[in-house]
Image 1 (cartoon, rainbow, N blue to C red):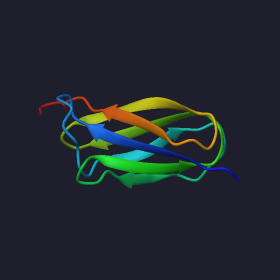
Image 2 (cartoon, helix red, strand yellow):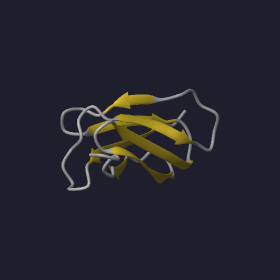
Image 3 (cartoon, rainbow, N blue to C red):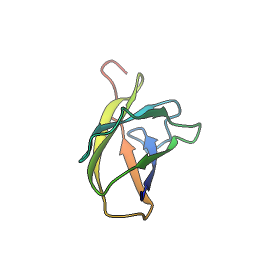
Image 4 (cartoon, rainbow, N blue to C red):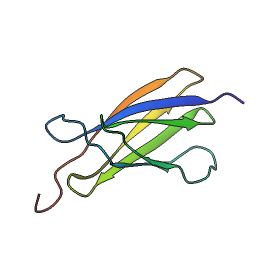
Length: 91
């Protein structure tokens, strides 16, 4: 089975990396288990997706709130995305 890797970076409104943000799959074109991870110290993450189609990937940080982005996976090529969080209320 072909797998596509989506690499990305979680950033705050200023474009600075957000370490420790929860990154997760919001929706996918196929049934799949819950997938989640934390961004590393550079705000980076990598997730594997099993099938072509449109996916929604979200990220959440206690300091910077949450956001999500959609990404089209066409085949086995690696895809790169950026998730820009907005300031959480009171931050």
